[in-house]
Length: 373
Image (cartoon, rainbow, N blue to C red; front, top):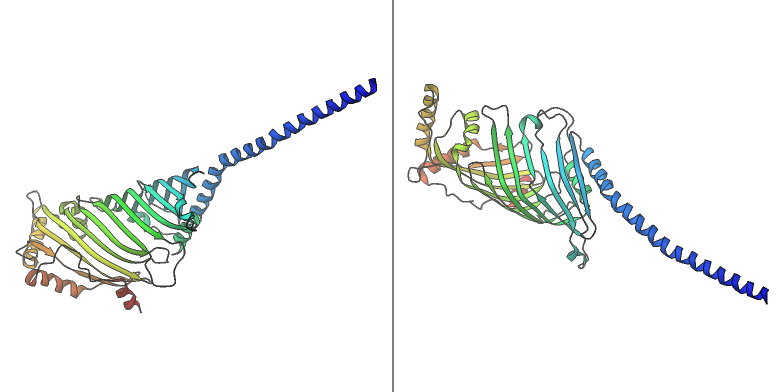
């Protein structure tokens, strides 16, 4: 009897111990899995940050880095914070690219359609081209390196690309005064940006942008592009309206020796690029302009009076507009402007008809493609 009782007690104890071990295993495995997932989640931003910095480090002639990466698994997104890029031999500390916040996410609604596409939203990005920095000597990037970097950072199609409150600027610090031609409050939307070049001559990506120019002009850009090419194909219309021409004085003073007392500046352009061949025009207009001010020196007054004389002859007297239409055509490495056509267009505006402050709508993508062929 005692032996039987002891055996029963032993079996009961063994069964109890097994249940304890089972309970421990039942809780241990989920704990290990949860702990591993948490560790991976903590490590993931650092891994992605290292990968992004590797991509930027592989751009010859440039130095780039990101400050931080934030991962959102629920959205299938990562946010790149404070991306910086500049020439290795830059003479200034002004960054060529400064992107405070770039949100790259998966569009879940497209997954249900059998597509994996992304959305990129950039907030307050800045692209500042400092001439002294970009003209420095040293190893330069191959022409397609930036496209490889883009496809490495976003290895899927981009269905929607947006820029909110961006800035683009051209700066020349050696000029006196410094030249700073910029566009502020840049808002841009582009759709269907592909990460693979198409062999067909198509422009799959519509693009639209608005901005405020130097001199508080109103800027619009509308067209279509094929971005991922060695030299992107495009068909673009550009318009700049109602800018204060005096804001251009550092530029006109440096390159033409004149400055404006008052007036309005406008610029209209159409550009088509096919396989690296460009065809288009630029149509600048200056309205109600005055050149001479009382503070000018005698030589400045003499020169500006000389320019003003020709301005009077070559402007349309009814609209008080000095304008020309400058054709641009050729290989992008050797763009040539037609000097004689430009002069003829000045005379046409002065004595035949005034240029209208609109895009002429006479340049198409096929024009550049036909000219290339």
